[in-house]
Length: 318
Image (cartoon, rainbow, N blue to C red; front, side, top):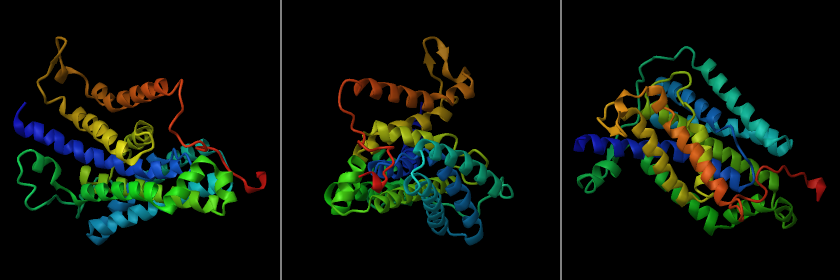
C-alpha cells in the first residue's frame, strides 16, 4: 500500500467521522434532554436533498448548509411535537420520521437526481499546519465543515458541562419532574434540544450531498443515520468520547470502499475478491458488535444513559 493511499484513507476517515459526528452530536443533545430520536436517517436525507437543491439555486454551499440545518430543525420540531408535546411513543415517532423523511426526500428530489452540482465545499488549508507531513495532510487540509464540527463539539461540551443551560438540559434528561419543580420548562428544553439535534442532522446531510458525494441520489444516506444513533451509545453520551468513536466508525466507512483496491491477504483469502456487497456490511457489523459489547458491559452495573431517556412527561402526573 503506497503512502498516498494510506494518507488518502486517513483523510477520508476524518471526513466520514465528521459526517457521522455532526448527526450523532445532535442525537446526543436530544438524548441528554431525555428524548430518543430514531429519525436521524430521515433528517439527514431531508438535509441532503434540501441542501443540494439550494446549492443548485444559489451557488453558495454555506447558504445550502444553513437551509439544510433549518430543514432538519423543522423535521426535528415535528418529532418534538408528536413525542414531547403530545406525549406519543418516541420510538414509534422516530421510526415514522425515518420512513417518512427518506420517502419525502426521494419525492422532493425526484427531478434533481443525477444533476451535476454547481457548487460544493472545497478544502481549506490551515497556513503553517497543512505543510506538516502526514499530520497536516490529514487534519489541516480539509473542508471547513470539518473544522466547524470540532468547534461545535467543543461548544457542546462546554454548554453541557459548564453552563446553567447545560445543567438544566442534563437535569431534564435525568428527572423531568424535579426539573419542572424548580421552575424549568420541561417541554421547552426538550423541544429545543430535539430541534437543535435535527438541525445538526440536516447539516450532516448537506455535507454528504455537497462534499462527500456531490449530487443527489435516492438512498444516499445509506444507513449512516443509524450509525450516528449507535455512536451516541458508544460515546456514553459524552461529546469527547463521541469524537473518538466517530473516528473509529469513520475509519470503517472510509476503509470499506477501498478494500477492493488493496492487495490484502487475510487467512489465505484475497480481500479484493470479496463481494462489494459483503464489504459494505462492515460498518454495520461494527455497529452491532459495539452495541453487544456495551450491553454486556453495563449488564451488571449502572448505565450512563439519561435516566428519563424515552420517557414522556406530563405535568399533571406530578
